[in-house]
Length: 364
Image (cartoon, rainbow, N blue to C red; front, side, top):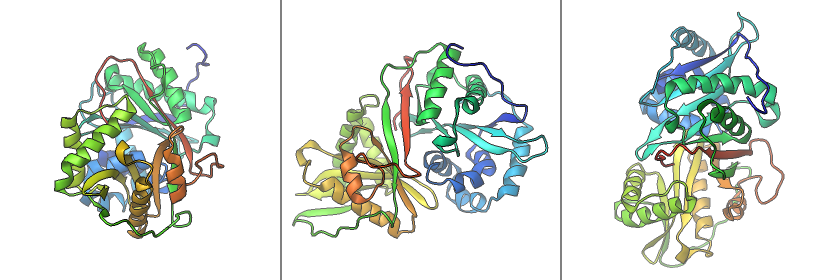
């Protein structure tokens, strides 16, 4: 492979295919729970799919011994699943010796939502400083080989995760399937967090006729319009107003979106769509142009963050683009490592790269 030194993983490094969220969590939950903030995008999607009752019982009562037993069972049944139609996860494990307990090293998820497939998501429990090319390359190679047996290349329209993982995946995947990477990244972002120690709780009186509240059915059209505008800003994942209504209706029905209302108009939205036991992620913040530069987004994000922390979440996380002016808003609320500041542990660089597959993309 041009530019890469061919390598082989050790016999104790292997891939496991998980065809259900329950199987995936039964083997990985203890590790994901120890890294709950960085694993949010993987863990929260799996918890949605496994269901509320199982998430509160089967998952949260799973310990290391349970996970090892589940892994042995799943590993004994490893097979290729060509063109798998539903959600699945691929995990890479390594053991120091044939008799040692394997450790989880990489996770790949292929999941979808109401509006279609999500990007391929990648995650590792390792910190960026622990990732070297010699460690990562053989593991990405066996991961992409397994993925190639599971889905057609058109399914892999983009990949998102820690920058080092995504760049290596793209190099190996494009060589494997002969599909080029899009010339510009779809998204380059910081993954940041806020907790009670960093939160800046400024109580200010709202003007008459202004309100912050959870969106309800009568807000559907206003929320849908802002969902569409938010998606259109991303260029790569636009939404028609019809599909935006589908998204807005689902967010409202599940109680996952808050609004800043001024003069009976929905001016700003803030969605929280990925939650696990201790961590929730703010996943969509947008103010329509008419109402910008009035502090509405800061008021709304601060209010939602306060609500989440007050409800027992130890951390609220979000992604924000490298060049996004919203960094200043999040910094004032208490999200760390933004606006040119030093990046503390837990603030990671994330990247989404697209592939020129010619296929339609999902939405996230």
